[in-house]
Length: 404
Ligand SMILES: [Zn+2]
Image: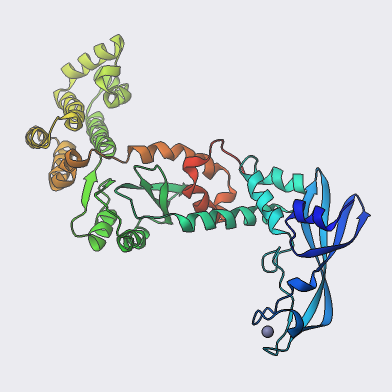
């Protein structure tokens, strides 16, 4: 039933003659040979009468299956001697890439299946190895990533993610407009970011601002490449710092208290870290007792709550005034950790106020964090760091989270 045109239409095998088909072990083997009018010299492109056939070779390729039935193409190839360039070379094989033992059509099918099923399942469905499927999928993602342009990138966010327990980090850059992860690199040093920033610069991206926490290495990286790019220190991390300051204040005090007072303080940690609008009746009573018990801690709490208003200020001018007053009030408390926080914010004043020019934050990147975690749980990701990064680059379009 297989014919030259059947193979042409179903396997995209163009320019080949069907010789015969064998059926063995539930699989079909289609023997083919290059049509003489299709012969070209691999060296110089000479054709037809310039070529004489000498040796023979045979190669077998996986072809598209029919249902669950495997199919192969068996190529009866020739060595060609070229009169024009003098080379003796094997005939070119346009339907497969390099040394690969499957058809291009088969590889496309693998990639299509990867969009709807985990690698493991694709491999078992097709009866090929997990590695073959993964490598095909990687080549596909690599090709697509290569085409991605940085030409219109305006607003980005950078942050670090813990990729293993302990202290192994990855630096990730998100395009805040397209939602694509543009860059991922091991570590969280300036070197994890600089090469990417240089690429942005080389692409003449109309970059306006970058959102980040106050990690000095990232600030240094930006300044290494761009003199005047706006750095926006985002709300998310600053509120986290304020919470840490309260936590430290609370722990300091706990050490100095005894008996019932200590008990009131003990249950207060989450109360103090919670937004005021989220407290219920008992929570508010508890807060009241804390206030009586300890003026300083309550003061720190109020300052933290108040700080959150900064990013709701209507204008740069209002923001400036608010931040200045907040820093002054925190310094005046004399509370070690609040004073330290105030000094840090004062040192990063410029980056905090840049928020009012761009209103961006690393929030969307934090949102991607969950998807990254899912990808991370698929442990193979780290055994093959390149694959993990490729998957990250397309994480914005991965609808279901496929293992493999
Ligand atoms: Zn030649």
